[in-house]
Length: 119
Length: 109
Image (cartoon, rainbow over all chains, first blue to last red; front, side, top):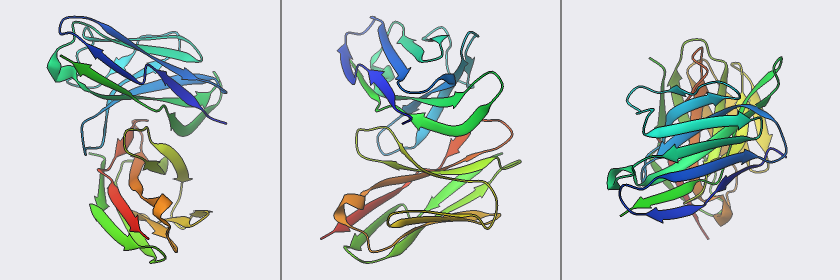
């Protein structure tokens, strides 16, 4: 149980284009999903928190107009990197936390990650 | 400010050589301390959640313990397949996970 998928697993795009990454909780409902970024040999940096049906909360220094997050259902969140540039190249990982409107669990379960390379 | 420090940064063990990884933390209102395993190029895999000092959890060759200031991940008789980066994270009042930089474990046959 507690499986989270991400698609695509890797993507290469040209500078100035937009890329959408999907995160799905496959066997549980996730009221909250998180998006992280990880640089080589560094730890995970939280970018934003998204709750189903409401606007995402972005961490300080993360441009909300550049990293668009949508959490349209209890099993799907998307991250769109708009007008991507080489400095956006990174490993993007989502996580999902199980819960309902009355019960929230603490554990976050992570997807396998998406490697984005912007040329 | 919530903070997590992991040591050592890297650890090389011979197969069967037991050891411990350390996670020191400061957090406002600990709601949980989490251990994850991360293989290269993959997302973190959940291992344990610890909620209060004195709590211990075990899974196969791994045992996690918690005090008010730190957590240990004990690895007993490790095998090469235990090689990975082990991440520690804390959750406080802010509801976010604050991660340490991890311990890269290599187990040689």
